[in-house]
Image (cartoon, rainbow, N blue to C red; front, side, top):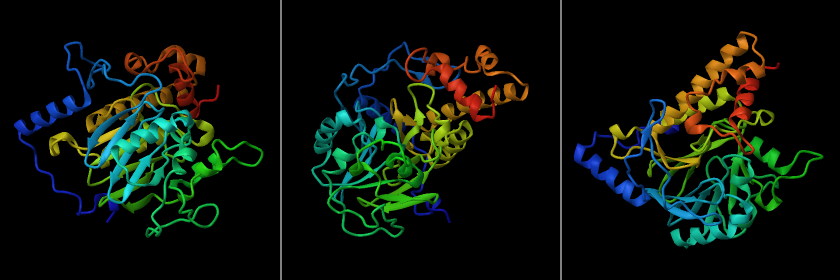
Length: 355
């Protein structure tokens, strides 16, 4: 039986209305949310609330408790997930290199235990920039997990935290022949996997690292089973349309398939008080309903562009048709390195468009 769906996972009972209301109030209070009258539904989806007034200032980070043994560090680039307990600390992503000192200080307020593992969800600098500086402060537990995979040097360095990733991500981070590596060698993954799942048991909790391609062919998501939290990386970006790196194997279809997998893993709040919480690569903490809405958005846009390509429409014609029009108010961007137009172009190329 697949690991994720083993019977050892908890039995869920519908929570009472009072329990659900109490959980919602507690969650809103802990996150500093302001439930205001200006929250409005977006394209028939979940209510969109205004930004929290307690968002970290530029150059600062903020720690948010999620649930169980999991915290979230915001403001260091991509969101960072922290799982802490008696065994030590596990990080999912490390943020920008320039924010490493802030991240390390934030980690120390969560736990003074050693950093043992870093799991990289994708290869982009806002996720892995801090790998070298942060891994160097850690110390791996000197044993091998059951499906241990040795790193590029053939042995695990116990003088720093172990960096885990899907194997294709390691090859691109390390720099193919003739290219400059994206990050210093100390931050390269030394514990890669090439199967559907890599499993750890850490801090009295099963941790499942799943290969889920999305904006590249090497993305991972991390499921903390007992805490009931998934760290989704760039599979879920609530701040805009997601980046799709075609050259690195990313595709809109991979996004949709991996979002379906995330929905399958997550439990709706109606089936358990609070339900599964999802830490996105960017943006606020999410739940099952948020992921369903995001998946539906990606599916609609993919199907529209795919239909236009089948009709022989050029990229210019597809852009003019505005296949994202229903969602632009929520996810659209007109400026910056990744705009609505660049997203549409990536989707167009992803579904076979070439004109």
